[in-house]
Length: 262
Ligand SMILES: C[S@@+](CC[C@H](N)C(=O)[O-])C[C@H]1O[C@@H](n2cnc3c(N)ncnc32)[C@H](O)[C@@H]1O
Ligand SMILES: Nc1nc2[nH]cc(C(=O)O)c2c(=O)[nH]1
Ligand code: SF4
Ligand SMILES: [Mg+2]
Image (cartoon, rainbow, N blue to C red; front, top):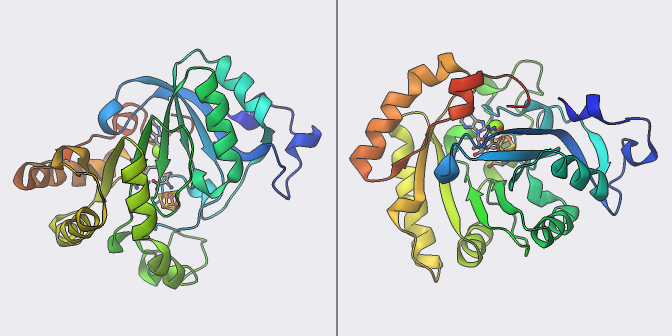
């Protein structure tokens, strides 16, 4: 059920506007199977924050980035919604969840309660928090919203420069891989993406004080719908075999296509 349907939007904590000290802008909160990465298939509660510092043209969470919509939920309300869902894995995603100071406090509260936490992040922001798996998806040049590749109704061109400037922060990436158990999950369309992935990995391996095994590098096919995935996934699986990286499916798209709260 959409969080906006299950929660009283008129309560003070949900007033749209400034970020409250103990609350987060929440786009949706739901129970599903982890669809991506090394924990694919694990029953998990997803907490999707609103707001992003990037604007990938392909973003499958349009309402957290291009057209940010949300309810404001207090920390205790979020915890109660999570506890009501009975999964011991929690996935904090967005939007970009690490934009928000409050994400740290939420992760601390989840850690105290014994949850396994995965944070889905674009890797541009480092925060010190109890994160069990940093699921980092650095954005390649092919994600940049050029005027030809901007979603319908979105402001054309406006975000191109900013996205291109901010999509890689080597210091943040380095700290994330050094401090947390991690996976690097690249969204791939075709072989043209591979030189940039190899270059980025080379730079990160030079910068980081920890090993970055190929086993922790995952190629994920670009596609927010079954139709689109049918075009990209075999090509991306072939690239994973060719380069010796892992392939990750997008199980939730196979199972539920682009339905919300899946
Ligand atoms: C919506 S993002 C939120 C977390 C964070 N902003 C990020 O990009 O990692 C969650 C995951 O979905 C991936 N993603 C978004 N749109 C996609 C698409 N069209 N095809 C494949 N993966 C996509 C992102 O790369 C990321 O791994
Ligand atoms: N089932 C499911 N698995 C996911 N893994 C990462 C997701 C995300 O949007 O961050 C996601 C999602 O949206 N749904
Ligand atoms: S960084 Fe993540 S949430 Fe932000 S626009 Fe890209 S895919 Fe969407
Ligand atoms: Mg998703």
